[in-house]
Image (cartoon, rainbow, N blue to C red; front, side, top):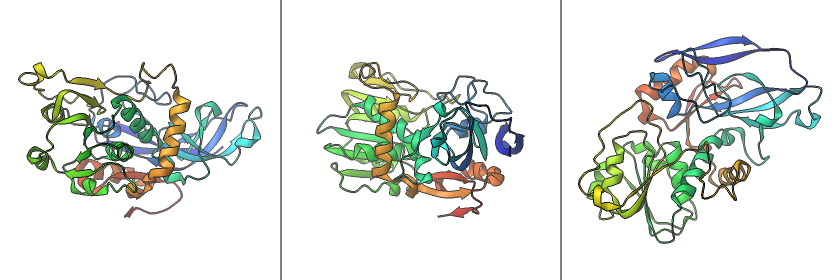
Length: 339
């Protein structure tokens, strides 16, 4: 059984790669060799910076003991290399996705793995958790024909959410981000909605300053004030950001008090009660895979690192986020690339 190179967060702004011996494969388990894994520039940076509260994470494969040293991550794509005696041999050689920390090999029960459609490349499949999040956000927002919609934040989740929203016949879809690289990243073919791309200052000057539906996806709690300021009477704000321990003063006085604005907490670990009678995780997974095939988000990978260069990857995201969109670990031996 090979040893696994596994990434650990050991202290704020410190990571190391450890060689972890793998136990013998049990009869009902499989061994997966990782091809690539995606870094979450939102949640993982909270871990990296020491800003993560001691709360259970959304993904079952991640430990609820959120303390250093911590193996953390949830977007691994790999190939099943060995199967236990009780496992159907059809799993052997299958491409799979797992909500799994960054590691070159890992052992899993087949029930925790998701088969990847043959039409998807591994790097596309790395976006699966964020695409499921985007599907959940859109379902919670429930956009209506002809609405004006605003997406604050064009990180990966924001880009995926805006891509899905562009398929709706909205009056207008506006996206906002302070980073020019991310504002320029959204390119949608055959879109049904008119799409405006704005910087924060542009939004304040825009004539479309009142939206029916706003998605707050910046990761900055102060952006809630921007969302409230630009939401129409009885409009909805879907809050998809996880702020961790970050705090900011939110202005709930003034116009908000009379606005009847709805603040909607949206998190991918559950399905909205309004939908749960008809929807389950499997159905949402299928929608996410289909959306990945349409949107092909691998075009937003700006950097690839080997796992041994993990410290450089997280330093880049921490110190120069404006240079990145999606950063991935490549386990096939490819060197660092800036595309």
